[in-house]
Image (cartoon, rainbow, N blue to C red):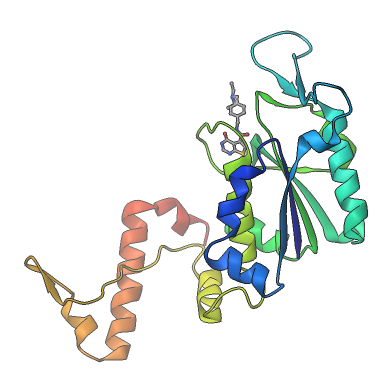
Length: 230
Ligand code: 9D3
Protein backbone atom coordinates (compact mmCIF):
# COMPACT_ATOMS: atom_id res chain seq x y z
CA UNK A 1 0.00 0.00 0.00
CA UNK A 2 1.07 3.53 -0.72
CA UNK A 3 0.07 6.24 1.82
CA UNK A 4 0.64 9.89 0.91
CA UNK A 5 -0.05 12.61 3.46
CA UNK A 6 -0.60 16.23 2.43
CA UNK A 7 0.07 18.79 5.17
CA UNK A 8 1.66 22.17 5.86
CA UNK A 9 3.63 20.43 8.68
CA UNK A 10 5.35 17.40 7.09
CA UNK A 11 8.07 17.48 9.79
CA UNK A 12 5.47 16.38 12.36
CA UNK A 13 5.37 12.95 10.70
CA UNK A 14 9.05 12.00 10.37
CA UNK A 15 9.58 10.57 13.88
CA UNK A 16 6.16 8.90 13.97
CA UNK A 17 7.11 6.91 10.86
CA UNK A 18 10.40 5.77 12.39
CA UNK A 19 9.22 3.62 15.28
CA UNK A 20 7.48 0.31 15.89
CA UNK A 21 5.11 -1.26 13.43
CA UNK A 22 5.15 1.65 10.96
CA UNK A 23 8.93 1.56 10.71
CA UNK A 24 9.06 -2.24 10.37
CA UNK A 25 6.33 -2.25 7.72
CA UNK A 26 8.25 0.36 5.70
CA UNK A 27 11.50 -1.61 6.02
CA UNK A 28 9.71 -4.74 4.81
CA UNK A 29 8.27 -2.90 1.82
CA UNK A 30 4.68 -3.44 3.01
CA UNK A 31 3.91 0.28 2.93
CA UNK A 32 5.36 3.28 1.18
CA UNK A 33 4.62 6.16 3.53
CA UNK A 34 5.40 9.81 2.78
CA UNK A 35 4.40 13.22 4.10
CA UNK A 36 4.36 16.06 1.57
CA UNK A 37 4.49 19.81 2.12
CA UNK A 38 1.37 21.41 0.67
CA UNK A 39 3.39 24.57 -0.05
CA UNK A 40 5.10 22.64 -2.85
CA UNK A 41 1.85 23.05 -4.81
CA UNK A 42 1.43 26.79 -4.24
CA UNK A 43 2.28 29.10 -7.13
CA UNK A 44 2.35 32.58 -5.55
CA UNK A 45 5.35 34.37 -4.08
CA UNK A 46 4.14 33.97 -0.49
CA UNK A 47 3.24 30.27 -0.91
CA UNK A 48 -0.27 30.93 0.38
CA UNK A 49 -2.31 27.94 1.56
CA UNK A 50 -5.19 29.79 3.27
CA UNK A 51 -7.51 32.76 2.78
CA UNK A 52 -10.38 34.47 4.61
CA UNK A 53 -13.82 32.84 4.51
CA UNK A 54 -16.50 33.93 2.05
CA UNK A 55 -19.43 35.14 4.14
CA UNK A 56 -17.11 36.45 6.83
CA UNK A 57 -16.39 35.10 10.29
CA UNK A 58 -13.32 34.13 12.29
CA UNK A 59 -10.30 32.16 11.13
CA UNK A 60 -9.00 31.15 7.75
CA UNK A 61 -9.97 28.54 5.16
CA UNK A 62 -7.57 26.31 3.24
CA UNK A 63 -7.47 27.22 -0.43
CA UNK A 64 -8.63 24.65 -2.95
CA UNK A 65 -6.04 25.01 -5.75
CA UNK A 66 -2.90 23.71 -3.95
CA UNK A 67 -4.90 20.88 -2.34
CA UNK A 68 -6.36 19.66 -5.64
CA UNK A 69 -2.98 20.06 -7.41
CA UNK A 70 -1.32 17.98 -4.64
CA UNK A 71 -3.89 15.17 -4.78
CA UNK A 72 -3.85 15.07 -8.59
CA UNK A 73 -0.06 14.96 -8.80
CA UNK A 74 0.24 12.28 -6.11
CA UNK A 75 -2.48 10.24 -7.85
CA UNK A 76 -0.75 10.49 -11.23
CA UNK A 77 2.73 9.75 -9.80
CA UNK A 78 1.49 6.67 -7.94
CA UNK A 79 0.65 4.92 -11.20
CA UNK A 80 -2.20 3.26 -9.30
CA UNK A 81 -5.66 3.04 -10.88
CA UNK A 82 -8.18 5.48 -9.36
CA UNK A 83 -10.52 2.57 -8.50
CA UNK A 84 -7.88 1.42 -5.96
CA UNK A 85 -7.39 4.86 -4.40
CA UNK A 86 -9.22 6.50 -1.44
CA UNK A 87 -8.79 10.18 -0.70
CA UNK A 88 -9.41 11.01 2.95
CA UNK A 89 -9.87 14.50 4.37
CA UNK A 90 -9.36 14.54 8.12
CA UNK A 91 -12.14 16.79 9.35
CA UNK A 92 -14.15 17.38 12.53
CA UNK A 93 -17.23 17.18 10.23
CA UNK A 94 -16.32 13.67 9.06
CA UNK A 95 -17.62 10.18 9.74
CA UNK A 96 -16.37 8.97 13.14
CA UNK A 97 -13.42 6.61 12.64
CA UNK A 98 -14.02 2.95 13.50
CA UNK A 99 -12.20 -0.37 13.09
CA UNK A 100 -14.69 -1.47 10.37
CA UNK A 101 -13.88 1.74 8.46
CA UNK A 102 -10.14 1.05 8.81
CA UNK A 103 -10.71 -2.50 7.55
CA UNK A 104 -12.47 -1.12 4.45
CA UNK A 105 -9.64 1.33 3.80
CA UNK A 106 -7.01 -1.40 4.19
CA UNK A 107 -8.23 -2.93 0.93
CA UNK A 108 -7.09 0.14 -1.04
CA UNK A 109 -3.72 0.26 -2.81
CA UNK A 110 -3.31 4.03 -2.47
CA UNK A 111 -4.57 6.16 0.42
CA UNK A 112 -4.11 9.95 0.30
CA UNK A 113 -4.59 11.59 3.71
CA UNK A 114 -5.20 15.34 3.66
CA UNK A 115 -4.60 17.16 6.96
CA UNK A 116 -6.27 20.52 7.34
CA UNK A 117 -5.33 23.42 9.57
CA UNK A 118 -7.23 26.64 10.32
CA UNK A 119 -11.06 26.62 10.46
CA UNK A 120 -11.44 24.17 7.62
CA UNK A 121 -10.93 23.31 3.96
CA UNK A 122 -12.84 24.84 1.03
CA UNK A 123 -15.84 22.51 0.68
CA UNK A 124 -15.35 22.22 -3.09
CA UNK A 125 -12.19 20.18 -2.43
CA UNK A 126 -14.40 17.28 -1.30
CA UNK A 127 -16.58 17.52 -4.41
CA UNK A 128 -13.67 17.99 -6.83
CA UNK A 129 -11.62 15.02 -5.58
CA UNK A 130 -14.29 12.65 -4.25
CA UNK A 131 -12.64 12.77 -0.82
CA UNK A 132 -14.22 10.99 2.14
CA UNK A 133 -14.24 12.95 5.41
CA UNK A 134 -13.14 11.24 8.61
CA UNK A 135 -13.12 12.51 12.20
CA UNK A 136 -11.25 10.67 14.97
CA UNK A 137 -13.71 11.70 17.67
CA UNK A 138 -15.71 14.43 19.30
CA UNK A 139 -12.99 16.64 20.74
CA UNK A 140 -11.25 19.65 19.26
CA UNK A 141 -7.69 19.27 17.95
CA UNK A 142 -5.55 21.97 16.36
CA UNK A 143 -5.37 20.27 12.96
CA UNK A 144 -5.66 17.09 10.95
CA UNK A 145 -2.03 15.94 11.35
CA UNK A 146 -2.48 13.82 14.49
CA UNK A 147 -5.70 12.32 13.02
CA UNK A 148 -3.74 11.39 9.85
CA UNK A 149 -1.13 9.64 12.03
CA UNK A 150 -3.94 7.77 13.79
CA UNK A 151 -5.41 6.57 10.47
CA UNK A 152 -1.98 5.60 9.08
CA UNK A 153 -1.09 3.63 12.22
CA UNK A 154 -4.43 1.79 12.37
CA UNK A 155 -4.22 1.03 8.64
CA UNK A 156 -0.64 -0.21 8.44
CA UNK A 157 -0.96 -2.69 11.29
CA UNK A 158 -3.71 -4.47 9.29
CA UNK A 159 -1.53 -4.98 6.21
CA UNK A 160 -0.36 -8.58 5.76
CA UNK A 161 3.10 -9.02 7.30
CA UNK A 162 3.07 -5.79 9.35
CA UNK A 163 2.52 -7.44 12.73
CA UNK A 164 5.17 -9.59 14.40
CA UNK A 165 2.35 -11.83 15.67
CA UNK A 166 -0.46 -12.20 13.09
CA UNK A 167 -2.67 -13.73 15.81
CA UNK A 168 -3.11 -10.20 17.25
CA UNK A 169 -4.76 -8.92 14.05
CA UNK A 170 -6.90 -12.06 13.88
CA UNK A 171 -7.94 -11.56 17.50
CA UNK A 172 -8.76 -7.87 16.87
CA UNK A 173 -11.31 -8.71 14.20
CA UNK A 174 -13.39 -10.66 16.72
CA UNK A 175 -13.22 -8.00 19.37
CA UNK A 176 -14.71 -4.83 17.84
CA UNK A 177 -17.84 -5.24 19.95
CA UNK A 178 -16.33 -6.21 23.28
CA UNK A 179 -13.44 -4.80 25.34
CA UNK A 180 -10.35 -6.89 25.96
CA UNK A 181 -9.95 -8.69 29.30
CA UNK A 182 -7.40 -7.28 31.79
CA UNK A 183 -3.76 -8.41 31.60
CA UNK A 184 -1.19 -9.41 34.25
CA UNK A 185 2.47 -10.36 34.31
CA UNK A 186 5.10 -11.07 37.01
CA UNK A 187 5.33 -10.58 39.94
CA UNK A 188 2.32 -12.56 41.18
CA UNK A 189 2.19 -10.32 44.27
CA UNK A 190 2.91 -6.56 44.21
CA UNK A 191 2.26 -4.42 47.33
CA UNK A 192 -0.43 -6.81 48.45
CA UNK A 193 -2.08 -6.88 45.01
CA UNK A 194 -2.50 -10.44 43.76
CA UNK A 195 -2.85 -11.74 40.22
CA UNK A 196 -6.19 -13.63 39.95
CA UNK A 197 -5.54 -17.22 41.05
CA UNK A 198 -7.05 -18.80 37.91
CA UNK A 199 -4.34 -17.21 35.73
CA UNK A 200 -1.66 -19.03 37.75
CA UNK A 201 -3.52 -22.36 37.70
CA UNK A 202 -2.34 -23.65 34.32
CA UNK A 203 -5.96 -24.61 33.55
CA UNK A 204 -6.30 -23.10 30.07
CA UNK A 205 -10.03 -23.79 29.78
CA UNK A 206 -10.66 -22.04 33.12
CA UNK A 207 -8.46 -19.12 31.99
CA UNK A 208 -10.53 -18.77 28.79
CA UNK A 209 -13.79 -18.75 30.75
CA UNK A 210 -12.45 -16.16 33.22
CA UNK A 211 -11.20 -13.87 30.43
CA UNK A 212 -14.47 -14.06 28.51
CA UNK A 213 -16.46 -13.29 31.66
CA UNK A 214 -14.27 -10.33 32.62
CA UNK A 215 -14.36 -8.96 29.07
CA UNK A 216 -18.17 -9.04 29.06
CA UNK A 217 -18.50 -7.70 32.61
CA UNK A 218 -16.11 -4.80 31.96
CA UNK A 219 -17.79 -4.00 28.63
CA UNK A 220 -21.20 -3.88 30.36
CA UNK A 221 -19.79 -1.54 33.03
CA UNK A 222 -17.68 0.76 30.81
CA UNK A 223 -19.02 0.61 27.27
CA UNK A 224 -22.56 -0.83 27.33
CA UNK A 225 -23.26 0.68 23.89
CA UNK A 226 -20.76 -1.78 22.34
CA UNK A 227 -22.95 -4.70 23.39
CA UNK A 228 -26.13 -3.22 21.88
CA UNK A 229 -24.77 -3.37 18.32
CA UNK A 230 -23.62 -7.02 18.35
C1 9D3 B 1 -15.45 26.34 15.60
C2 9D3 B 1 -15.71 24.98 15.19
N1 9D3 B 1 -14.54 24.08 15.18
C3 9D3 B 1 -15.01 22.75 14.68
C4 9D3 B 1 -15.23 21.81 15.80
C5 9D3 B 1 -13.49 24.58 14.32
C6 9D3 B 1 -12.36 23.67 14.12
C7 9D3 B 1 -11.70 23.08 15.18
C8 9D3 B 1 -10.59 22.26 15.00
C9 9D3 B 1 -11.90 23.44 12.84
C10 9D3 B 1 -10.79 22.60 12.65
C11 9D3 B 1 -10.15 22.05 13.72
C12 9D3 B 1 -8.95 21.20 13.49
N2 9D3 B 1 -9.28 19.78 13.65
C13 9D3 B 1 -9.14 18.92 12.65
O1 9D3 B 1 -8.69 19.29 11.58
C14 9D3 B 1 -9.56 17.55 12.83
C15 9D3 B 1 -10.15 16.87 13.94
C16 9D3 B 1 -10.53 17.29 15.25
O2 9D3 B 1 -10.35 18.45 15.67
N3 9D3 B 1 -11.10 16.37 16.08
C17 9D3 B 1 -11.31 15.08 15.72
N4 9D3 B 1 -11.00 14.65 14.51
C18 9D3 B 1 -10.42 15.53 13.64
S1 9D3 B 1 -9.97 15.16 12.09
C19 9D3 B 1 -9.41 16.67 11.76
